[in-house]
Image (cartoon, rainbow, N blue to C red; front, side, top):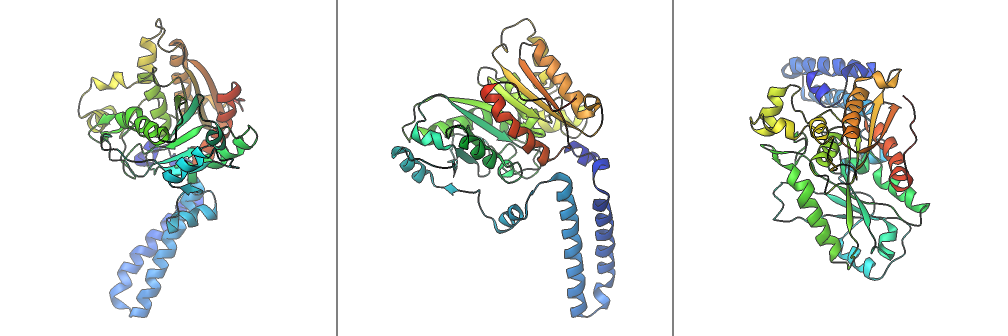
Length: 378
């Protein structure tokens, strides 16, 4: 239960059928183990099949809860290892840019690796909108897309629908949309870095230096000269990353979007575990990575007066602002405003899952382009 809570998943919000399927799977597994030696091979095949079906049932019910794979098609793509839609080579991206190709939708390519990036990242992807190929010389927003603790860099594509959202936005805005980098924040399926430099990897350096340098190098070869404006966009742990990185590096990030963030980076649910796991036992690192402490210390300074933020919280109760996730967002928003940040908050009905993250992201693009997003309720 504690582990689930740390992932932002409240066990009490799980559908009843998930727990039924878990109990059934446990019973079937232990029954199969008990019967294995006493039955013939054909019966063993039936037992193995029963276990597989039971495990699949748990996986399906779990997906109903977290909405990790929103469609059958996305599940099939993951199962067969299919890459993001319209993935192409960087060589082809260069050629299309040189031809000033007119495209109906954006293009995705793999971000080249660099020996200068100290973080052992998995494959990261870049989405480039149609208008960039025809122009691309003016200032261009680059969203750094970050997911939860249990993640792959593809999650915002598969589960969050980010590329579909960007393409839909581009169709009604002359092909314009942000570039998006689908960042690996953990280097492993459940390596909880919280985007800090520590025993679990140099995640912060990777995000604030490694990824931008690699993107500049990749796109610079196309002849594009416009400046890139980086915008951290994160959900769950990624939301905590977004606000923490913006607080620590306001000279790099003038805007950020934090969806369902924790109040501060944490690992294991208590201070001792966080200090040991994230900072190698250095308690002095706590305050320097605490957004509330950073913003509060800047109340009379101009460091954050150019920064614009959107913070969003999901809730399953009324009033929405009294929900635990909403209280974290309120504390962060209050501190950020006192520090000079221009803050928009969204308190929307929903759960801590990818469906909520995707819905908020659909609202983020207009907010970044033309003003505050519509607040769906408190």
